[in-house]
Amino acid sequence: MSHAPAKASSETRKQLFRVWRGDKTAGTFKDYTATVTPGMVVLDVIHQIQAEQANDLACRWNCKAGKCGSCSAEINGKPRLMCMTRMDELPTDMPVVVEPMKAFPLIKDLVTDVSWNYDVKKKIKPFKPRKPDAPDGTWRMDQADVDRVQEFRKCIECFLCQDVCHVLRDHHKHEEFIGPRFLVYTAALEMHPLDTEDRLADLRKSQGLGYCNITKCCTKVCPEHITITDNAIIPLKERVVDEYFDPVTKLFKMFKKKT
Image (cartoon, rainbow, N blue to C red):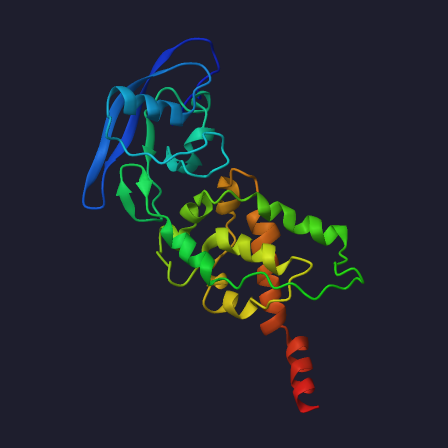
């Protein structure tokens, strides 16, 4: 069954919203009828529901400009930023379903506990620059190498990629897999032209790089359009393969040990 998307217009209309209400012990969806005016995003409607119908509705947000990553949720079954999801993009002939991210523990209503992500980040080996190679104490780098890691710096840590990843969302491998957000973070360090730290052993063993089967679902939900799979995860997989499974590299290492 296909649904007609909303069309941009100058008219005010009514829209049924189905919002998850509850905490980690119990909960259910509750319906609210909201007034939608031109230019509104989902977060506007959630604020309207808070103000007029449900003062105790919990929702995390900050900038309302798609840059803080705070208002992550699932809208009609897809992980999205509420502040960047326009009402005129959504079907009008069905309820707009808003629920919390499913990969993290629920706190209340639309708010989840994402603190696990910050703990993961602390365990990744930090940036370790090589010694300056110029007389004035600075470094020389190729512009292409500098440009390669700039894309990864756009991440706003909304954790939508973590939420959509089946390894975390469906299989709950939080103790074994760092998720696409931190594979991007690791790639930014590993590919940095000044970095000398070796993170490949961690990627292979404790950080679970092998769990990713490159479905590209993380790339599809990224609000910053970072090419997570092709530009970060696959190159990291290639580096691990080259280091631990390439027969020529193994032979070279064996020969080096003997000599």
